[in-house]
Length: 152
Image (cartoon, rainbow, N blue to C red; front, side, top):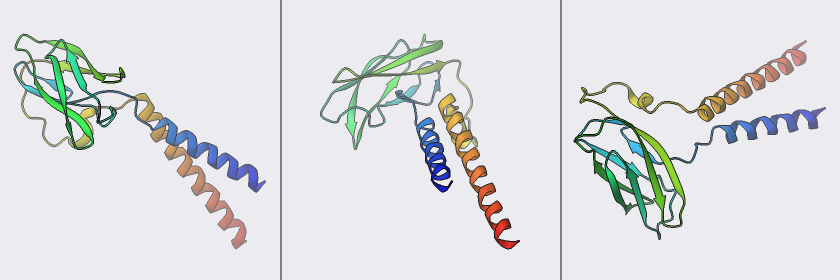
């Protein structure tokens, strides 16, 4: 019985970690921009540092990313005529490609006080978080049941 319980716990923990892993995407900050403003593009360490990395989007054209620490990154100026949602493609020297979206709209005020909530959530992140909460709740119930049996 203990082996089955331990195996179930291991499977649940592995699934939770796997589901919470981020999808392979390029990183653009902020995810929204205004015409004529700067955005920051990064590979988040996905390209090897011996390679060359570039980013392309209809919002700013082609930008060559520079090595900075353990990743490639560079800023890009959004075209003055850009409006709408644009795909950003980051290409590593070995041919790997990563994608994300960039929303361009009219100039807005500062989005202060939102902390980390601006980036949004992915389905994998929500599923991973739900799995971790379920795993923690199940473990708590198991521990409380054992304590209750031992006290009786």
